[in-house]
Length: 223
Image (cartoon, rainbow, N blue to C red):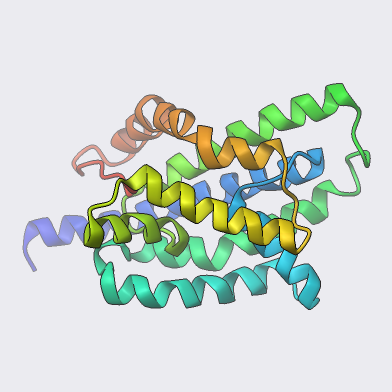
């Protein structure tokens, strides 16, 4: 094994832990948005709606959906798959489920307008900071996030167009099955990008560089 390969292998564990922490923070943000009754990202909203109708826990259902989405990604977009893919697809739904179980008894239902605004702000910041962290780890993209760039690679259609269509399809699915759709869904679907970029450049890249100074900082951000 070359020194470069050994360095890459030694950096995999801290990058995996970084990705896991990012997924946990992202899921906490989703749970906070759920507690605020403002809606969550399209993928989670659709999964909550369908899993509720099926009587299946969110974690188990989202894992099953991710497993289905992973098949075309492995076939046509293998370069987006890595350890971070597995961490995201396995843990995100369970983290949202667990954090929601902790927050539900604590938060008023429904929250007052002031608390709702605060929870909305906190939830969006946590969601985008966590998404940035898992992407900054650079060890793979979630199956849902890999679909749009994979389509772009094979068709040449603009990423934003493909991603908006993809998100709108899942918003429609969420509405059809009574998932939590609201202003938080719109924010995470269309306006989270600048915040993710901010956390990537100002927070996660510098911190990861300090943790792994001799490792190039890769970002698994699609597009």
